[in-house]
Image: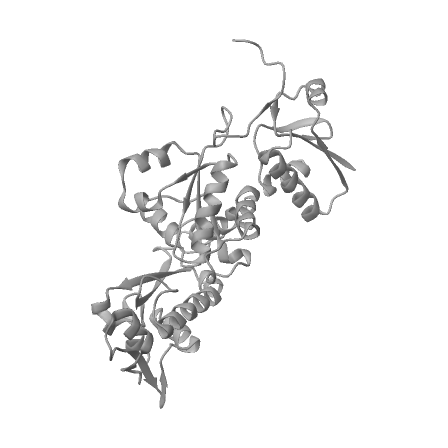
Length: 80
Length: 290
């Protein structure tokens, strides 16, 4: 199972990131757990200083912007 | 400068963080529900920090400030209300290849209807931009026009550029929602037929686009006409004659009590709006495929 974490404080861009991740996971039909992390303490602990941020299996993949669905698919497939 | 100790959000003010993607958004803002949705979506995308809305009319007349904005943008997003693609055509005439082209009616939203826009419809368009759905349309186009230009998408070494079919629909009234009944029906049929034949023609390396020409009321004699690469429909199909018949909605638009609008006669039948089979046949004839 792939662990996908989206760090964000609940603003518009974070919402868009979550939505795009959900679409990408659904379209790829992969087994993934999507976690939405809004706690500032958790972000600081993980070293996230700019949101929205996308981590896959603990590794930072995107920070500070919303990737499109196709980009997220490539990230999840390990092509990016 | 004090060291940042808490996470910072990249939202707000349309500004991407340093090194982020600078996007410029052109909406057709046409006089229909779909056109107005394109504009509303562009406004919301700007508010959400996706990019910055820019003036499509300004792009059409080539103001220096808009050219500068385009030059400094990383991505150009075009949102059109319908497949006529006016904003995209304006961008292409200005030498811009959009990174995303979103067509509102492709998202299952009808072009016409009340101008009271629903939040649900605006959200559909805004989401499509965030999701990058408009890239697919541009990629399809580049597959056809890429490479040597023959339409195969590779450098196959053939001679000559891909052929283009321009279907021009002429009418009085400012747009498809505000022209006479038969002209409007003809216009909708032109758009439907072009969408149906587009994939077939693109396989042959032929690009196709629709151009809508709004005529002054004085040019009513040319209203309800279709040209294929500049050749009128009636010149392409043997035995077709042009006539005129009384038109109540033309009378309303022009203020002439006895206004008449174009119709065609073919094989003993009179057609006030042009049927799809004749439009498709004329398109093939114009390309020498029939």
